[in-house]
Length: 616
Image (cartoon, rainbow, N blue to C red):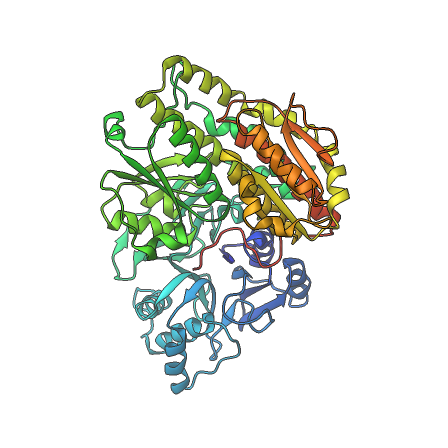
């Protein structure tokens, strides 16, 4: 969950590393640090807080070296202190290391090293890793055509249990970086007269478009003019060089105040990109190029299992509703973090799906591996080409929405809803959905971006509503059927960025417990749509009103609500059932965003959270 940047080349390393850390700050912002090779040894600057604090600290050290590493931390082992910030330097001053992940056996490693005379300055697991590398480095003979540092890292990793993405440098190896990964992403950036490494491409895309995605168990050695990839077991690897397809401009704020605001307003374009080229020529169904399953094989599937975490789990719940509604195939949804440990019995003809924006979510990756271990075909929906989940899945669908920087997911979520709806169409047309129904469904999906644009024009009105509710500390979100997961998502968004306690429920479940929360100080957000659920939802709203609860209604246009029933009304276009969850999501995103602004919260970097969860 931390951010890593490394550079070796002809230019000063520190300015590039600091710029890269700023772009990775959404991955961890408890503390940050940088270490640079200088004549006579290493120079180190570390500081708690944001990268801006580190920038001021680094200026005092006059870092001029051309090889260095940097890190922005999301704390796991040890509190938020300067001492616990990365990089960590071995007690002999020989080795510096940055690390993302968790070393599970660091206690036993630390005890061993204490017995060998090594000392420790921090509470972190990473320092044990750095000292163990230094231990092997001291025993490693001087290089005879091989990298002494690489061999020391390789020997160290054979004793390590847990997950890691690491970059290491030594004072005796000018211009050399060694990196390795298991469970935490690392990407090499290949330049002219320089090479780079980072935990996310956004940190290096300003310097190069050519990248190599390291796989689990791989190590890389970088110099300014060369790189090589091998394994922990010493086997050489022929690298696969990929090209980044987006520019640095896609990750810039532009005219927006926050990334979350930018990404909310990018959703119409993101939806268009997600469905581009994915409809059949006759316009009656969806088509996907990367599923690696024939229609005949799809027809053999009797059940689907979807696994994800957080916001992506909510997308799975909506997809469950749509597949069962339009394709008439049973669907189960499980938390990825629970699936591996539950040993759930699965139907033999089950197709497994995971959803993860980053493609690196550790729990989701573990669920994918568990499904494959049990012999099931596993597909993925994710947004990052070359990610671990993308590589390990048997097939899948890329979201193509561009980089999402804001910690609270917005455009990634609505594109997941769209692709789930397209999957329901794809399966439904293989079963019993008619050609004409398929045509109507496709037209509805194609119209989704314009419907979202219409909702976004109400941003000013929603901002005014938010100003009136920013002072409350509890809120309920209530919906029915496919809008129940959107109620969950609305509550999660509000919790994530404004720190208001919020909960989502099916509207009818309110009277089975949550109604005890209703008071003048606990407003409720209701999703109200036409159809058989209309009168049921109105009844639930009246129960809230009878107990003096305030109501914000998000209702489809043209509905006549009883006079005085809601205190605030936000309208959304009346639309096809497959599109409704996407359209209904926009108001709760805006409401959460503007409430957080009113409360003075840092919406892009909410406390205790990081964008990509790569530790269990």
